[in-house]
Amino acid sequence: MSLSPVRGAIVTGASSGIGRAVALDLAQAGWRVGLVGRDAGRLAQVAAACGNGAQIAALDMRDTAAFGDFVAGFGAVDLYVSNHGILDGRREGEAVETGAVAAEVLAINLTASIAALHVVLAGMRSRGAGQIMLVSSLAGLSPLADAPAYSASKAGLVMYGLSLREALRGTGVGVSVCCPGYVATAMGGEHLGHRPHEITAQDAARRIVKGALANKRLFGFPAPLWPEALFSLLVPEGVLRWFNAKLRFTVQKR
Ligand SMILES: NC(=O)c1ccc[n+]([C@@H]2O[C@H](COP(=O)([O-])OP(=O)(O)OC[C@H]3O[C@@H](n4cnc5c(N)ncnc54)[C@H](OP(=O)(O)O)[C@@H]3O)[C@@H](O)[C@H]2O)c1
Image 1 (cartoon, rainbow, N blue to C red):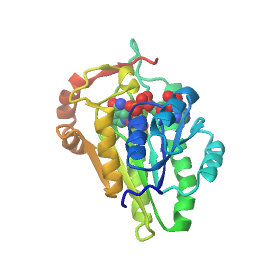
Image 2: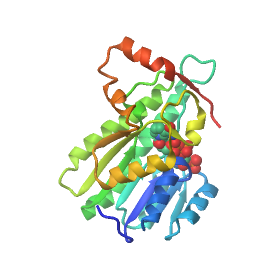
Image 3: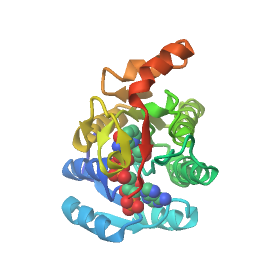
């Protein structure tokens, strides 16, 4: 896929962090962007910075009908970046996250993401063209004892994305999955623990856009953590526990 001023991209979770940086990158490259998030004020600021007729939709991604209305009014979506998400898990003083926390994380990060993806996919399939980028996490490959539902939601995105990519082979619609490591964003501020090799949202966004435009299948960063995450299901449990001991954390919501 080449960069062209007439191309349209929708980015979810665009009011903050990685999604904001992805939207700005695309807008600077001439894309017309649709920005989705919950905070209308922050979305408006990002839209103003993007220019190029950027459109905003302040909605909860669990409201698939509202998302569908926005997509219908946006026009052709050449690139869809499914990036919205929340981090939640074990709070200070708890041994394990609650069931309520787990349910909310799965509903937003996984169930809503898959439902929304199908809204965009319908148009891409009818045009026989488009690229979907699912923003997962290294936590989708390496189990997080402190945030099991977050890990599960991100693992779900990895497997859904890779399965869908194969199912869509030859249709003109590509699917990519990206697994970032620690990124300095508002979400990063809710993670109380060691964050080795943390990178900026701008750095993460550059890699995500590049990977999407290259129709990469599955990739992650930064370099030192990506292979460790990939092999985490293969190493003996004791080795993984030793490695993860310095990465234990609690979550403090804003
Ligand atoms: N930061 C990291 O270390 C890290 C590492 C690996 C993967 N990731 C993933 O990268 C993605 C972006 O995270 P970030 O670090 O940029 O976090 P962030 O700054 O907290 O941004 C999260 C974005 O998701 C949106 N969002 C959350 N729940 C939503 C909902 N129910 N409906 C609509 N929008 C919703 C937020 O919108 P509002 O603020 O407007 O509500 C915000 O725009 C997430 O999927 C995250 O899991 C992050």
